[in-house]
Length: 396
Ligand code: BGC
Image (cartoon, rainbow, N blue to C red):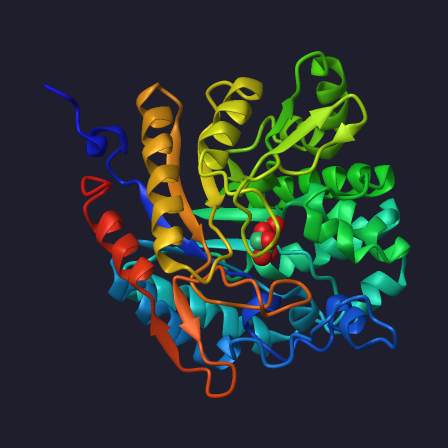
């Protein structure tokens, strides 16, 4: 008898969707990314503006997630709201995010809370941001404040994609927006690498003391694949951009894997997508094996570590293509889970069509958002994914 896919997703598997504060809330005016959007001559084509108005419509978002059949929801707290100026903690904003956590819990959604998803308070960026080790104390103060609202939260991610953070910072210095579109980013700033790793370890200690949550961080897995003869180059390429961050997760309770595509590495570094390959709206190669390969890579570096796919998805206006991508991705992940990797969950990026760091054009959502009324409309892929989730993968 052929085993069914469902046997490969363990009981209690987290089936969720991911979002991030800046991309969905709207009006995130005290954040450094907002400042980058509105500065004269900004390299960002579009401003986030009202985003999906999820700051006010989060209940609707949670209703959608649970209505689809999901059992978990990943979102981020916005530091620049909670700590508007150094030393000041907004109890009202903490209460807002606590209501969201309670909103998840009453609906039967496991909240997966990210403390830092790319954005910083403007004042933190003005102090030199993640390039300065003495700024970690500011992050710790924020994490301490956040830890007071985390009761009942089982999964906490300190940072989202610190490796991407280290790479996009350089991009803004150089003003090279095109590099982001092509998927081959500038090299990470080593100072940001060191400081975010140290900050993660300090936040982890603090959270372990004050909460019962499982603590980890998420890494952008780029699936660096060596062309024949470029194996050493690919290893050297991958260490500062990805593996050093996976390595820094040793001692965590879990690691979040986030993958969308692959990047081939030749003698001179990153190569463009193969000629004739299908590209998504972000210009990335259509590569549904991305998440499974990234999970395997992570499991090789961190044997036995519980893994959650905290992001995976596709920017497309062809919703059948989203279903095709996601079903292939999930079938490949079922095989990985079946091979003994401790895979705990899958979070689709994203619940909503949202602000893709400079543009609303790439649509990653399971749910469409009208840009003027903010009305949400479930796409066929949303209903499809919800049915897969409800059946723990058996319908794949
Ligand atoms: C980020 C998201 C982003 C997604 C698609 C990840 O790098 O965590 O914020 O929208 O990929 O680009």
